[in-house]
Amino acid sequence: MDAWRKDPTLATCAALADGAELSSFVGGPFDVRAVVAGIRPEAKDRFLLDEVPWEHFPQGDHAREAVHLLRTGDPRHAGTGVVDGLCANDMRAAAVLAVPFLIRIAADARHPYRADALADVSHPARARGDRLPRRLVGRRRPGRDHRRHRPPAPPPRRP
Image (cartoon, rainbow, N blue to C red; front, side, top):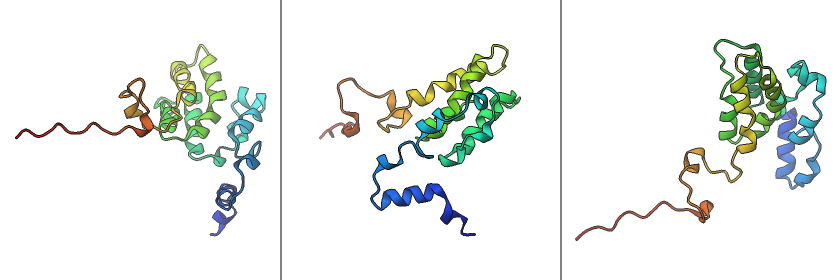
């Protein structure tokens, strides 16, 4: 019942809240760059998804399931668009874990969802870092600071 108290993610968040420096976690089990770099080539090539610590990252289980569904060619192919959705919801770390596997799916010329995997590969890199919702991205105007953008004022009333 108290298993959540031993959760390493909770411990990391608590340490940060208590004033730990973010740099002290570089290279650790919650640094997505280190985790991706540490995935063995055999695990990537043979799709050994259980060797990746998906659970260390928010929505990691969804990213793992998406890779599995795309890999198996599930007729529902429910895995397509999941990585894009994770990026849109600012869950890029989980999406980044999927990239090495998506590249291998996209490289397989006989895979039925090759194009879907190829489209999903680019989403973590293209995700907006300024935290603007995707629906607002198309409304940007050049030369404006969009973080401080306010909606236009209503038209003046006529007397």
